[in-house]
Length: 247
Image (cartoon, rainbow, N blue to C red; front, top):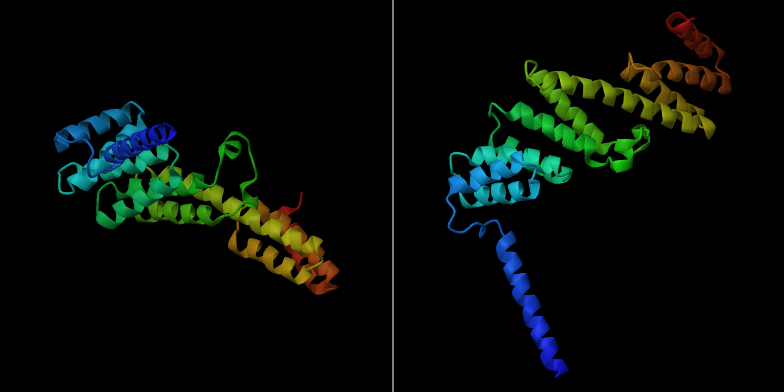
C-alpha cells in the first residue's frame, strides 16, 4: 500500500513538473495566441505593473516570432521590465542584447541609460537604498560599468532626454570613486605604508580634480610627507593646500 502511495505521489509530481515546464518555456507559451495578442497583453501587463507576466510574454514573442514587427519593442520593454522587477543582472543582459542587435536604434540611448541604472543598483540592497550607506566602501565593479554607460549617454547622445540624469549620476559616481581612493590612502597611512598612501592620495588629486575628496587627499599627503621626512615635498603640498583651501 505504501509503495502504491509513493508511486502515485511520484506520478503527480512528474505531471506537475511537466505542466510547469510547458508553461514556463517561452517557446511553448501562449499556444493559439497571435503575436499581436501576445505583445498587446504583455504591454498591458507592463503598464499595470505585472512585470512577471510582461516578461513571460515578451520573452515568448522574442523567441517564437523574432521577425514580428513589434519584437524589437518587446526586447526594449524587457530591459525595463527586468529593471522594475529588480532583476538587475537580467536587465543588463537584455540591454546588452538590444545594443548588439539594434546598435543604431533611435532608442539605444535609453538602453545605455537603463543598463547604467541596472549596474548602479545591482549590488545595492534594500538597506543601502533606504539608508545612506557609504557605497565607496563596497566593491565598485558594477559602479564602474555604470559610469561607462552614463558617459556613453552624455558623450554620444548629448541631446538625449536622459543625458541630464546621466550627468548627475556621473558626478555622484566620480565623487564616490574619489572617496574610495581616499579611504584606501587613509588605510595605508594608518598601516604606516606611507609611500602607498602617497600614491593613492596623489591619484585622488590628479584624477579627481574638483571633487570634495581632493582637500582631504592634500591634507593626507602633507601628513605622509611629514612621516617620510620629506620637508620640501611637504612644503610644496602645504602651499597648494593653503592656496586652494585657505579660510
